[in-house]
Length: 385
Image 1 (cartoon, rainbow, N blue to C red):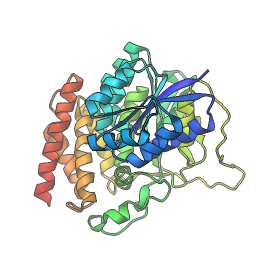
Image 2 (cartoon, rainbow, N blue to C red; image 1 turned 90 degrees about the vertical axis):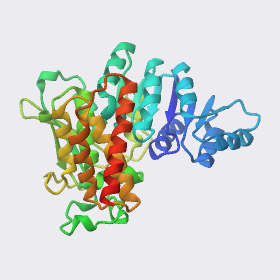
Image 3 (cartoon, rainbow, N blue to C red; image 1 turned 120 degrees about the vertical axis):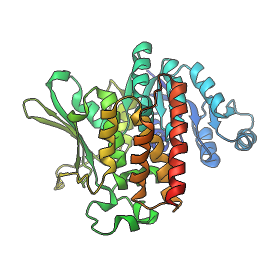
């Protein structure tokens, strides 16, 4: 059976890895939609190879360029977020890969679920901002949310067949980023230093989140909404080798972990083929090659951003959405060298304290809260700069 898929964020690292999986299984997948932000040349190459029905790009002049380049092929080009949501909502696809970075990916991801598509979720911010709404929509539309992030994908695999009451805790592994053993002045860290991740080749924003361990904090929030466990049942451990992608401890003190090669094609293939498992044509991890596994506790005084996620969950309500919005503003400011590395935590903590009490019940209200939180964080950045 051929699965029809859409890829939201096709030119990013997750999107490109997804297309590697599609390329490896040409008889199993048909691409219906490719959506990108601004990388029009890469999007054109993808469109010519995979021949989707639709391609999306953000800016109108890029869309005009794409139409001229595509020529007579039966590929329709659209632009603008409203157009993307409209098309996604009317498409009939089996799986939508949601890989648009940040809160911008929330609306199209939910539009895909409204259309009855299962979601291969790579955009953790969508679940952080609107986890409650996404879970309600998944139940209403009878669709599955399968995490693509290697950590949550691992947890998903470790929980298969388990009853909720059998689980003691979920354990998310973290590489520790570039500053796991750093003992210098954190306030003097430069963007260039923070972008040098020791294990993964990732985008700029998530690389900074890895350096502050905010990525793990956001993953704690995501795990809470994805799997339904309380914050005190979700832990983070440092695992520099990034071989064990995450694990579950059961009430009988047994651990079940998922391990493998550090390549996103593996969790993506799992998400696309779920609930089936299929043979994998990609390089595998050889357990006989003398793998060494180390695990350490997180020093939350050294990486205080990780603690903010637990604080946000304990505040309940919409605090996670505030934290996510503030963090996006703070990371952008750090990358532009307008604030110090340590100011990322300062902006995030102040935003939580000021904005977390605000209520938002609907998606539109959440988007409004996101915008208000960004404004507050931007003002904080100006004061610190």
